[in-house]
Image (cartoon, rainbow, N blue to C red):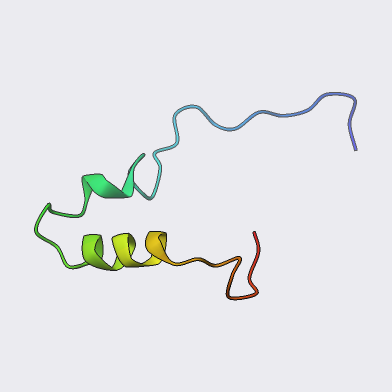
Length: 49
């Protein structure tokens, strides 16, 4: 290991958008699934983050 930390290549393009909503249209069914999952009481189901 060297003395200096090498940073990321600033000229490298990313493989995905900054925000996934940039790729998902407003009328896509994934928004319904997202709203359903957000409404779940995961702690009450025995799941915790």
